[in-house]
Each structure stands twice: as C-alpha cells, then as structure tokens.
Image (tube, rainbow, N blue to C red):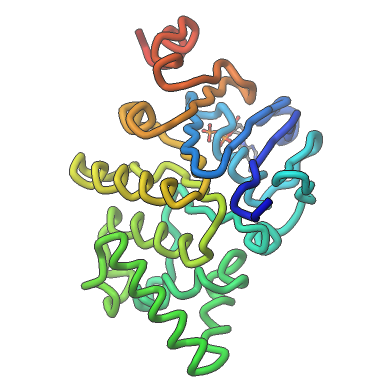
Length: 255
Ligand code: ADP
C-alpha cells in the first residue's frame, strides 16, 4: 500500500496531568482523504489529543498507528517524517521574518520542532532555497495570500496568520493534517474560504483531523465526527448522526 493509503489509528490512548485525566482511553481513526471533526466542551481533551498525535506529548497508555506501523511516543520531527503536520490554536510565526520565510520553514524537518531553528537552518544552499521559495509561493497562492509573501509576519492580521499556518503545514505535503481551531477569529467569509481549502486538501488524499468550536463548520465539511467529554468519546458518527444524538445535543449543542 502507498504511504497515502494508511489510516491513522488511536487505540486506548490515555494521558493525565497530575490527577487530571486529560484523555482517558480514546479510540479514533482518521482515514486518508477523510475530514474527521473532534469536538467537545472546553477541557474535554481535544488539544491534548492533537498534542499526542503530533508528538508533543507521550501517551501513558494506548497505541498510535499509521497503517501497520506503530508511531513511537516522540518528537514532532519524527511525526513530520511520518507525514503528519499540524497548526496551532494560537498561530505561531516568527514576526521579524517574511511571510514567505515563515511558510518555507514548514518544508524543513526542523520547522516541525522549532521555527527559530528552522529559520537559522535556511538556506542550506541557494538551490534548496529557490525550490522551497517556489513551493512556498505556490502554497501562498493556494491559501489566497500570495500578495503578502514579502511582508513581515508581524504586520499580518490574525485571520491571515491562520491561513499562513496552513500553508506552512502543507509544505510537508502531509498525509495527515491536524488543525487546532482554524476558524477561531475568522469572519464568515473567511470561514467559507477555510472550508473550501480543507475540502481541497482532503480531496487530494490527505486525512484531516479538525478540532473546532464552530459547529456549523464541523457539520458542513466533516465525514466523521467524534465528540469528547472528560477525555472520553461521548459519541462518534456522521454529522447527521451527531446532530440528533441525544446526549450530545443536551450536553454540548445546547438543545
Ligand atoms: P480542550 O482542548 O478540549 O479544551 P485540553 O486537551 O486542553 O482540552 O485539556 C484537557 C484537560 O487537561 C483539562 O482539564 C486541562 O485543564 C488539562 N490540561 C491540558 N493541558 C495541560 C497541561 N499542560 N498541564 C496540566 N493540565 C493540562
């Protein structure tokens, strides 16, 4: 099977902070080309789940697999080698660097762990730099921000930084993309653009795991939805199933 055809699987993942069980026996599958929504109230374990998958935290129990291969607890750089990229709840950029440079560092393994180190590592050669820059410009086009390539990142608006982060994550050509609240702070027009972008990414074969508070976006674009509560799965199914799930509606959707 090709690298792109593997499923990202979590089985029995658990992680505590002191005596807080942030995730408590979580099973989750993200298939290639699928958009999987992860929702739940504040503190239900969504971000912790992304941090385990992307290697920032090591689970205390359970297994994390890509197809047949076990993913060892470990560093974000190893996840990048495995084709897993992410964005952050609060966009992380190097303000003094240009937008183009901020996107380019996503194309380096160092860029997955420390953006500053990655910036210092650029360029290894003029030729590598040209290749990375061309790809970064193309991806800025994909997210609709090509005119900002040479602007300092600290001049950008918050909503623009969200799209820059996605462009940076796409530099890895990831098999799986983890998005942590990408719609936060966006206008409804921007959310439309974001929805189209996420659909295009999944249509090219990447699996997307989307943590999002914006329920309309989740129900609009997801193929599968997992609802967390207190670090456990409260419900899992298609958006149509989740919308009418009794416990979800009363506990979370406020119906
Ligand atoms: P969500 O993303 O759904 O809001 P989190 O994954 O951030 O939830 O948090 C799950 C639980 O773990 C919460 O009770 C939170 O307070 C706790 N938690 C998360 N990260 C840490 C941390 N680094 N140190 C201590 N507790 C944490």
